[in-house]
Length: 356
Image 1 (tube, helix red, strand yellow):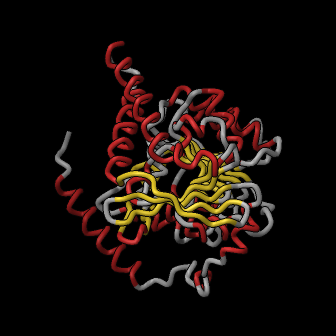
Image 2 (image 1 turned 30 degrees about the vertical axis):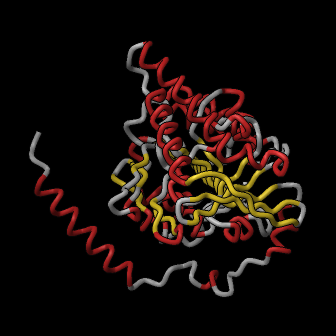
């Protein structure tokens, strides 16, 4: 009940000090970016039977560049503002549906709004490419506000293996190399009703996992557990800071685990599952540079990230994640496992970023 003004002033000063120090720190991924150019022939080889769909904004217009079977082509789609308007409408409807409170009439309107916006986006972004895409797995590189689109909701993509990447080059880099032999970290944060039950259920699937719940799930302990892990699953509240994306954070027992904390890891986890609301969001800067929790995890070298771009309801998330992990353990790729689980459960909002 006390005023938080003094604490907020202290927070601003501390964040300013962290930003100032971070500017002088050498980024761990700096050496990886030297000579980091895109070779289209090599990219086409790595895609295999997948289709790369990269969206490009030119003024008011939106275009798609596709790479399929080593053929590169460009397609005119729609006005950029048409796509972003429908994306906003879809995200609003999904947010309303994630809340358990509200009248039946409000929910009915949200269901209808979701269907209308999803159908409209499908016709704007995918219908002109239907003959090119076929039913192949998809790698999507969005632009601008479309980075926040939960792609699996679009009718043409329901049940289809779909990966979202910040760039074609990042997808290519994430898809290269061998899988890591490492540990598993399972983490439950505070103030999330079903988090500990979710982690307890998953612990039965991964008997070798480091399990951190309750007071043990501190920022320091979680950082140590996920450093170099093969798989990290974190069930906690996520906070996206549009005012300062590098302070986007996961809420843990003793406070936030921020982007700055993640940048201190020696080796990022190979696969990360963030069972947290809005954890997949990023701030889009000029040139489609992404800032935020998801963008930082990918930039540091995590190959696959499963996260949400809209709020998701707590209760259905636990069986969703159990089904998703059962497929991972059976050897199904993350993108396909997510697509099948989403279609099976009807739970919207999670996307697969990176290599898939």
